[in-house]
Image (cartoon, rainbow, N blue to C red; front, side, top):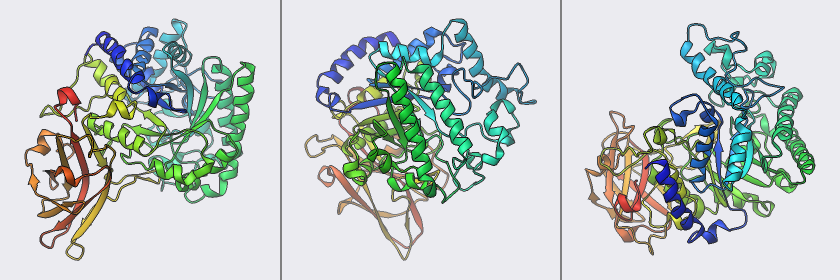
Length: 547
């Protein structure tokens, strides 16, 4: 669908969003937050990497507006910035040719592209953050700057590509965490136990608040990029230092907001449980008790948890939670670049609403593949599944009402540990001769008793072919569909020894809420159940949406 057609269709979609979904959209505290990481825009990836123009910025914001997002965030960076800073270098700036990458011209050019596009915009008299936020305001969206508290994308001396290295980080290796246990590049993360590190962060935060207060409604501290602030097991002993940092930001936001005769909102994106946040040095309960935040978002690092327990976080905070709680949908799927499909995205959104999240937070929701393909969909073999992200599919996710009777896939994570954040999943299930039966619970958010799907399909993947007896909520599953794994693109990412199964479930076997899927080996063997999905088909994909 071309963008002009999308805008025409969007007027109808917005009527849906503000019509039958009006009750939900007008709930106190409802938001659908869109986080633009800045580099995606600076690279102009939505327009085939051509030199970035103000018109391209406008088009990007318009595409986001078509999702129904209420809140538009622009990322300012972390130690390499997406704006002109007095405390850190602009991302991709080679400092007049002095920062190169030896013979690795591809790495240099990819990074220097960000700076070259900054120069293009500057010639047009535009600052990317300021212009994008102004445009978002014109589109009726709330505007925020989001700041990555400890980004580790470029913190790796082994790349031998100095254009990647932030100066403060490079000049102070004594401030590195020095711990490889927590994840990708965790050794190189800045250690916030050092006052100098916290002051460096405060310098940048203050600069951004002063620079953009007139065009933003709020500011976000993104602690999930990246979720490393202290050596392993040490964070819980530094909660007070981190709370003091948040206090200082709250005071700054209030002071700067007063200069502009408004209140600047302050939010934080953090981990999905109180326990893991405290282990990282973040005392969320204390922040809420002191009224430091206006809303909070929970999420993972990158690979999204399709059944992130937002209700458990809400219940843990109990009476201390007097502000909205949002949950993020991240783009990373089972494998790093195995992106979630439309059906999975709808299932994740429906699940989070069922978990009583006040709204959604969209992270890495990029439209480059779709836009660069002439705004046309690319379907997987079989014609039932689409993994190309579009504004339209996110618009469907804007409320429970707009998701009603849309085709969905509810799934469990295949077990991911990102910076010590473990997904809410029992997988993998290990069946052996001594433990021949295992079960997993998967939540189906839709009221299937009332909105009866035409077909309910169970997909599961095993470490090898095996003769398994399957039950759902105690009822035998026998209607196997050997052609469905290929038809519904469930063979993606399949390793040579693995096997994918599909069964149609009896309609009365499934219920809204938790459903217990049990597996039993017919003969002694060792086999793992490594993926588990339930697809709800309400109608043909042309009418009810791609899976």
